[in-house]
Length: 273
Image (cartoon, rainbow, N blue to C red; front, side, top):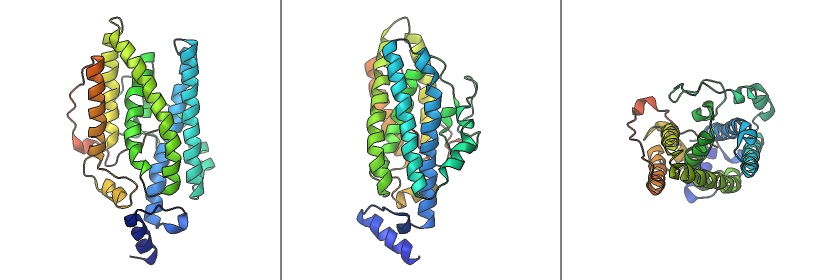
């Protein structure tokens, strides 16, 4: 182990946050860049996917809310790309190379499992289209909530700039989640939209469960050793499931049984935005 690695590890073990690229090993930097690029790309791709719903939202008030969510997501992307730029990552080249790809969506009835089908690092779920208002609000309800559970670990991570930046992002994601909850309760409580609500929930719930990765994965162990993550993938997923189950009981929605084939899930959790 190099002197730099020993010094870095000692700081991490003492709970001291790392603040500059000069303090970290190449392995730490590569892991950090990988995780933050997943978040940045997901924030940008997610914002692009929401844009059409500014025009299609059911009321003027909801158009304003959707526009605010789009603004939040693009702000999150700008923050994350800024952090990457501070690490020497060529943000302009990366975004220019992928910008058109970020708008690409697959057919609504397609199933690509957990694969990425483009060269950017967005979370797999952002390939799926948001075709209905129910899709939009259940995406808020499921995916934004999943993102919140993932980003809880970042709040206590060893990279100081990321941990501080995530606080503002986390607050705005909570707003998106509350928006989803409001509309889920409304759709689930209306006999005219209840069946659609149940179908749409099942679709986005299962897709969200897949983003958390495999239990006990080697990559997760590396991230935890570097304190870029704090929990095993499955521990985070179970926390998400428990919260959703409680809400669904309140709203009268049935939570579908999910029996994963663990080998088909990605080794690492995907950081959503």
